[in-house]
Length: 285
Image (cartoon, rainbow, N blue to C red; front, side, top):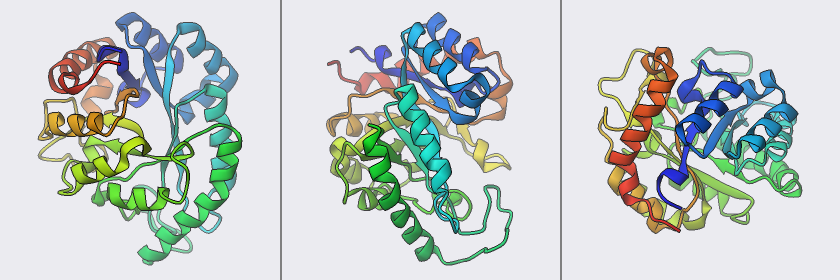
């Protein structure tokens, strides 16, 4: 495949678009794959979304998200539902954002059972995987652990490095548990290229967006279009390619200005920036 044939629109990049609008936008702009979000899929309908994507000839590069495994019940019921949804959509993987400290909600609100026990939280993630991996394997769904930037450790993901994610994935077959390499979250890590090489065929998803400086007040929205920030996409993409990854490359951007812009303009810009900053290292085949 050529580079553009591996480009995927993560639905959150054009957040104001519905599933149908995002699918139509991909077709209109010649983007062959889409990363879907569960909330939008539920709004459109699971079966309806599966049919819509299939009829449009698109691949589902990922479903986001499962995870939040650090609470008392480890969210097992919701994660089993997410696995079923990923199976119905034929998603290449189900992304797991594993959760922060117990009792802390995304955004930092502390609820009942709040704990500062970081090691214990990471152990809960490992315990949850032992329950979820067999269920996912029976349904042909690959789980993809996503390490997040350390600034999100307390409230969103107690996995902060690719090494930590790989350590958790290692007990399982690569076809059952992989990892997400997201440039925004991992660009800073001095060991990232070594760990990408180590990951090899465990790489289940490669997501790209830039890291803006200065960050906005809401750091969750600090992602930018490729070229607007500080990330060296060449080295990261070359590393992912050398590791053997040949799957779709998702552009996933959380950014207030991009969300309010004309989505068609966003996709046009996205394709140009992908060609300039990312695709030069993407191999055919």
